[in-house]
Length: 103
Image (cartoon, rainbow, N blue to C red; front, side, top):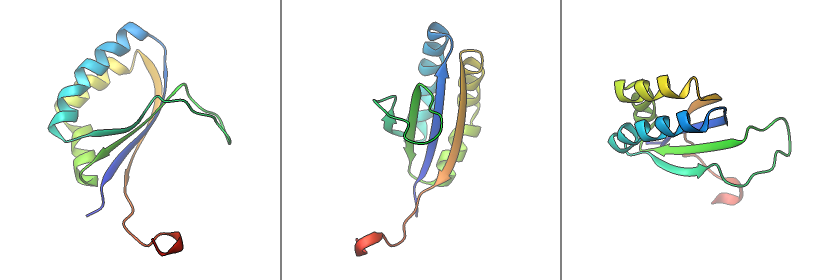
């Protein structure tokens, strides 16, 4: 079964309020076995526009990724994030097929 991923691009507009969002998202992330693969690391926009933070979170499945987002606990966190940042979030199913070079 392919894993699920959140791909988020974020500009934080209120650091103190955003910290409350981070604290609130810990519970649903733990409940749905989320794992950060990318969390605001150094980056370079080689095409298009970038935001100041880029985040990729892995879940055991696409269904778990959707369930986490839709959970009451994460929706509470979203209510804290909305006034503290501008962002885009895509939830996407991973790919389990053949890779270039046969690997």
